[in-house]
Image (cartoon, rainbow, N blue to C red; front, side, top):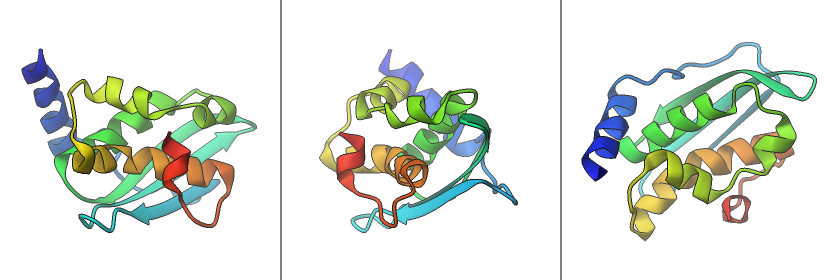
Length: 130
């Protein structure tokens, strides 16, 4: 089963469905993982409280980029409140493999960035993904 999920991660890394930038956008936020240099920006277009479009950009390892793409796909049509309720377990379920502490930070970067943007914070914090 892990091989299936590894293939999914490689596919999303090589062929992301949501890579790009939205201009104009209603919400945008960007941050990095200083331990490894991964960087993610997420742009959202919302209609009222509902996410209508998502795009991400940045650079990084297969885990961080696949995570951003899977997360982007999962939030289209969700309300901002539903996005705020997402947890690290949601990301780990999407990825489907066990991750060590260093790779976990890579996987959770996109969720941290997304939540900081949705909450309108000036800086992202690891507490956002607990």
